[in-house]
Amino acid sequence: MKIKEERTVLIVKPDGVKRGLVGEIIRRVEQRGLKVIGVKMVQADKKTIDQHLPKSQEWLTAVGNKSLEDYVKNKLDPEKYAGTTDPVKIGKMVREWLFEYWTSGPVVAVAIEGVHAIEMVRKIVGHTLPAKAEMGTIRGDFSVDSAILGNMEKRSVHNIVHASGNPQEAKNEINLWFSKKEIHDYSRAEEDIMF
Ligand code: CDP
Ligand code: MG
Image 1 (cartoon, rainbow, N blue to C red):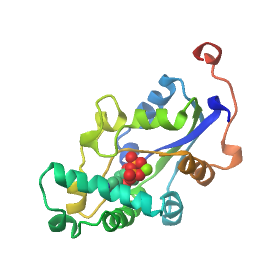
Image 2: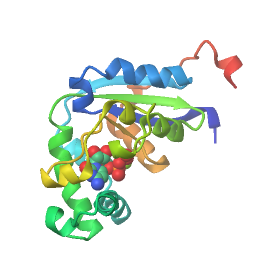
Image 3: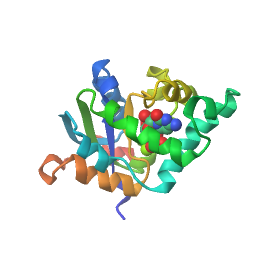
Image 4: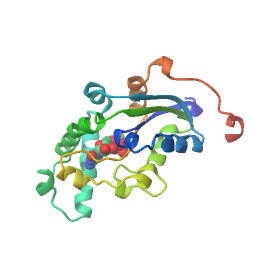
């Protein structure tokens, strides 16, 4: 595997675009030394989002558990606000709500290449839930929504950006969001001294 050429996808979601954060977000990626190899603004349709979002039990469970952890931390009953304590059921509800969020305006998809790009971009982005996202991360610096509030209002958490979570997602998302011609090959000026 070519370590320097690991690829990932970061997407500025509609709330990030509407808040004028596209430049700020891409700046943080470039500042770290990761290479932007594709950028496009798209009004996504439901079909694209359905292909973008994982369907696995594992992902649904992980999504549901993020809500459940928030209920435990805040000593609130998930049954009362989400109608269930089953993580998979919560995960499925969130997946449905995500269509509305993702198609509520244009998104900006950014293809990125670099050393451990998947992990590095996830670090720049921060935890899924704004309250858990460290200061200095995109979500920690710019978002304030919560999973419980989302459950109560029957919508997904608004957290500015998406980033591929693992190599499988990265591969799927590069192919889904970009054609071969939209991915570019060039050298960053400082490449020979960075690593
Ligand atoms: O985006 P990330 O990979 O950090 O999180 P995810 O677990 O893959 O969830 C995808 C998206 O679903 C999140 O970015 C949130 O917008 C939303 N979500 C939610 O609304 N409630 C949860 N309990 C978990 C995720
Ligand atoms: Mg994810």
